[in-house]
Image 1: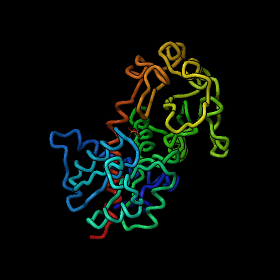
Image 2 (image 1 turned 90 degrees about the vertical axis):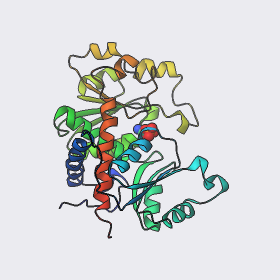
Image 3 (image 1 turned 45 degrees about the horizontal axis):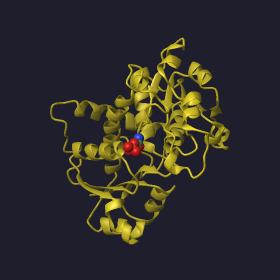
Length: 309
Ligand code: CP
């Protein structure tokens, strides 16, 4: 049996190409399982997983939860807003209390960069990073690449542009690492104020002209402006942002090819993407969500194989 080279999924930067191939092969199997009339396998009947969400989530939280249920794991769901974190309890105390209940795997979303790495050094459980601040969102990048592979046959050699608020985006960084590991070419496009200064050191090129970026690419991954992470104005107005970087059907119709449109969600319809594009046949946004379940089943399954019983 093949194994992951890592003990936790803390970020794509810790993975190699063989890890991604193994996750995708395993996800292929689970995708077939979840499309059967009986969508459940008994693989993780003796495993307990805690989903710790210190930040809001719809897709990631529900996707992990259903992936765990499909694998027959026992689940604890924790939301910081309704917890004793509000009374001042620290992250380590919170997690150690949860681990005392004999939990094997922690899935954690946290506003602080490196929260997953920190936990992995202090506690004895498998950690899966479900998004740490502006840093990484590894399962999102895996499901994004898996969806490109499903649609185009391969990620290698494909041209992918990530459009929007790159500066505050953990999806962008994890996608850059994942796409490059698989041999894709990556560009970013957005207002210069929302592009990190170090972006060239990641081997990524910048295009500030949306039309040129779309003419170049096979796939456009459109990101939301993360107003909740901004304490200053990075562009004059939402209206101007939409005029310069919003994707609408007219822009796509003027290209001489049909590109694929992706978005990790949540979508701000009418800001970074119009409804007609989000809901069009070029959009694979809901395929991404569907694939997220198979990818998360694969990641949990592969990490759980390492647990000594
Ligand atoms: N893509 C994503 O992380 O969405 P949620 O914030 O709803 O989990």
